[in-house]
Length: 239
Image (cartoon, rainbow, N blue to C red; front, side):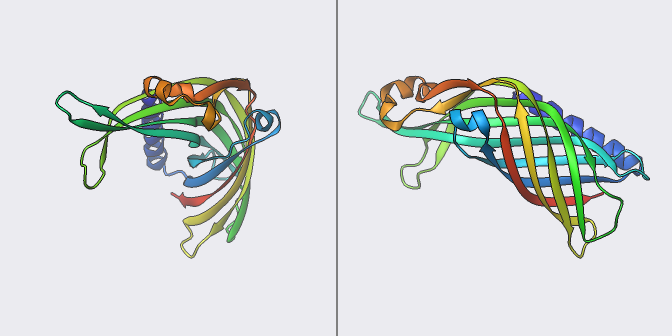
């Protein structure tokens, strides 16, 4: 998945450079977001996600209030971790921390309608179509210093499932004294086809010995649609 993310970021950076070279108007935004499961998703997995997103839009035509662009976001839902000790020959101890978490990475292409008005408050609406990747990740860290408790990552792995995502957003931009910087208040409603994601077991049901061997054992797979309401707040920069 890291290769896909790297490719998308390079593609977006190239697109941005091309847009600036053409002298067209565009916007780039960074948002904090909260993922609230809805409907059948809420029934199967009533857990709130937290994360961030990035918007990149450019104006299709100078005289039209339509922007085309992309949205990337990442969210974390649940995490379980355990510290343990391994006794080495000679009586030396090694200390490890094992983490496992459920996450969502998504990428959408979008069309945004935003009026050509130069007011302090500017409303907009957008339609989105793309993909979602619900995945589980595990990370193994080793304690490096017995006094300050610093940790170093020594292993990482992921497993997940992809599905189609679609929906829309409505928001407002509130511009500051600088006419190229605005506060972005937005709420998205995003649906998708069925996907397998991972739900943390009840703590008393987690076998800690098995967890050290297979961190994914702390989670149960569940398959359902993935409808979410996503309130967001952030900053937008015009270029």
